Image (cartoon, rainbow, N blue to C red; front, side, top):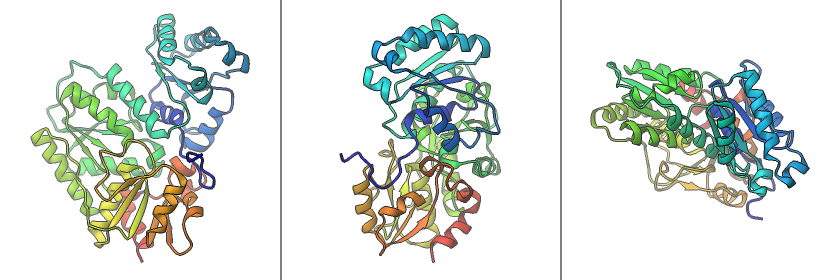
Length: 381
């Protein structure tokens, strides 16, 4: 029962991470599950839903289909929809029910592609992991399937932004602020994975000189691009002037040397505990340390944080572990839905995230890239 959250919420699921990563790319994403999961995603975790068209559907898996394994109905329904909608690609992602029945997503994707002639992906998500797992799988799959292997490096210095989705950054202007930071540093942004770019732009990703990974959802794609094109990557979000300066220097060094860069600040100790996804949290922690001289520990509560975290940081997935780490801090910075397990003796500062509390605190999610000083003045008193 250690995996059960008794009090706090859970992160947006891996299947929703797939949907978020592919939302703007002109494909058709099908969640294989009974009706319900699509409305949870679209109304709580997807702020673009009412302003932008996207083909996100549910298979409406019935009890009899699940028991008998009627895959032909799913394949037929998807093929019929694809014939009417003409998507650029088709993605089928899993939920707990097909995970329990042993559904073969890759085999079904092959059947769909053979029948429709449209590139198809099968993602064996289970609904039991966080959005990071699903979005990572989706972005890496786009790299390996669509990136042009014959593309030449651009004459000017260009960069791809990897791991840019509303689940980590919401729709408060942080994406535009990251682009502005890169342009002011002398880089042309080639593509944004996956907010604000088309699939056609992402196909040219191999032409970039460097990749900037702004959340852990982009790490797998960065490694795939490094493998295929030799493109180095830099990990971090330009939060705060001092850390943005370090990030700019790291980008320059990566272009010059071809080596990956992980710029951080790492003061010993940690009177402040910052809870969240690894890349954005370590970036914010470093920015706070550089600005205030106060040590900040990161508690990563999602997957794929191992390669990003510093020596004093930890990964904690379970509620009781998170509560224990909070009790040892003087100040906790986290999504408001973590507050119920924070001891009353520890000061708590709210930092809402789309991936954890969904739309509940959407209007209060700060743009840390351009509003870091304002946020810090409210938190560090």
